[in-house]
Length: 362
Image (cartoon, rainbow, N blue to C red):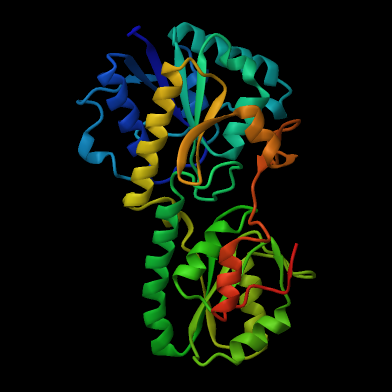
């Protein structure tokens, strides 16, 4: 077997499961007698001169820590030069060339890039950065908004974090006969709120993909057999004529209807927590698939789970499969997004179980 030198980096927001997939990639490289180097701080570290790297040995990365949240490689620093700041300053071309030079100086045969839909879209759009090496991408995000894959690393743990959080809220909600409006992350995608809402038996789940009527929501809550419970809202929902955080807008409407309530913002605990078993299994599956892709000389691909099968798809297919929209932070860039589909089985299940999810699927 040809000896290879592999680089690995985590980009975008952190989540649970990153250390698991890094550890499994490291283990797989050692079995193949490949060299493995970690790139610190994502593109921030790659932009540094020289690139910020760490040898991923048993001493530098304890196996017992692989289930912990966050990334041992780190995902970047606030205020550091990145795609966003470079584009804003009109220096994106120079920024990309510097990343390309850093990768060339590392003399890598392949790079495993673990990122969300934004990072993967950038990898496709600015593919010249990775000329001369194999690029294998692994999807991770608690938003689960990456096209072509049934699951992303970190999503299941985030759902469990929300469920555990709401389980505790229900105890005080019952004691005080009040409702809790819980605001989830997810950006413009409602998958996190939908899954967590169904799992925690929320009385209402409001997501950006489905239009809802505040009056009908209030009617639903007033007709509930209980005087307490959870109303799960995705951070991207909106109400015409209202502004502010999603949970605050719903809370004000409930207050106006004399429904006792409090808002709750789990915030970054959704991106924390010990990695649950299903995310660990997904990490192993993606790591194995990525390593096989390197062996098969594939490049510009992303690992996916489709109908129980682990495989790779091209980055161009990933990008074409989603809804392409302007990147909100990087001038001139586009992202490929996945949203809750109108035929998602959980929508029907929620409706069948008496959960209010809205009036019209967009």
